[in-house]
Image (tube, rainbow, N blue to C red; front, side, top):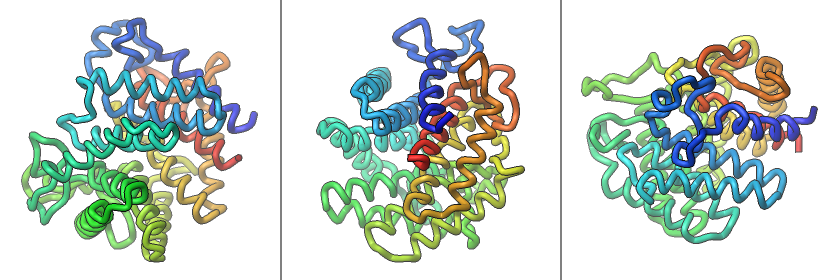
Amino acid sequence: MKWSEYANLAQQSLEKFYLADTKEQFLNNFYPTENPEEDNKVFNYWWLAHLVEVRLDAYLRTKKQTDLEVAENTYLHNKNRNGGTLIHDFYDDMLWNALAAYRLYKATGKSIYLEDAQLVWQDLVDTGWNDIMGGGFAWRRPQMYYKNTPVNAPFIILSCWLYNELNETKYLEWAMKTYEWQTKVLVREDGFVEDGINRLEDGAIDYEWKFTYNQGVYIGANLELYRITKEAKYLDTANKTADISLKELTEDGIFKDEGNGGDEGLFKGIFYRYFTDLIEETANKTYRDFVLNSCQILVESAKVDGYLLMGMNWKEKPSGKIPYSAELSGMIALEMAAKLEH
């Protein structure tokens, strides 16, 4: 099968395994689910942001209007369920949704999506930054002392996109300011990106939390700054982070299992999105081979009754209750493989 066919199959498989019985729930959080009420208590606002993105990936690949409608309907469902706004307690969740909104704007030209992305950006600037730990955006409103990569790096990406679109210097200035803080506080000399600092109000970095998505969004942030400034140091840093990620976080040509909390299921897919952007920028064959070879391992493990059920560990047959975050990660990876195939 071609990677585009695997990507199509993955899109269909999400509905096969996770489609919920109620409109409000949209997707079951787990498969299998014997007790949907219990399993679906949590509204996974940020998972749905990535579902919007991967549905949009399908549209950009197929150019089918029905795929775009699915992406837009997913976005609207998520926003409505969040009270008709992207504003939320978690700044990182808001940013994932803002990035999805901006991409929908570029695909459709509808101003409401751009306005949503701008609203999130402005809310972070107005309320999210403070001088604890020397600066940086907080993770969530009730925890302003805790700063982490999943907020700061996506904020840089969003700022660069808004700068490119609107040509207002404030966006680039905030991107640079945030990048300087992120790099100084949470990036090792070899390019490895740490998760966060001061979570327990002790000034400590969470060195034990080594996650793929932190590397991915920092690669993305560097790429966007490189494209704006044309300064080679940003592209060099993106490559350095990619190299150390593949060295430290993989085993036998695939990323290691990152945990079983549910959210971790999405981390690999986020890495693949921004890593593939880097591959398209640099045409690095080693990176490209990693994506395609690891996706081959993924699909061989995931085949179930003609569909793809993708678990937390891509090397193993999925077992137990699997969060749809893991299925989403696999979908993103396969859409990226299809992109590279094209």
